[in-house]
Length: 85
Image (cartoon, rainbow, N blue to C red; front, side, top):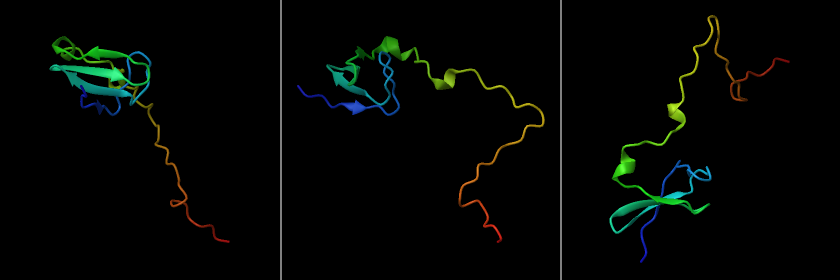
């Protein structure tokens, strides 16, 4: 039986850590996820819905900039002015 599989953009495999290799599909009303790189698979049941995976947004906030700090402007060729010559 063929199941419709959807890739989840930005998802990271909990086993191998590779990004964009997780696909989700449904089997008999049960939603499952699977990694195409390492074969990891599990069920995404009701119990899993209460716990969120740790992500980059869970890290502590950055320290404030020191007093007197200034922003750096990165110049691109379009930003530079022609030299008078």
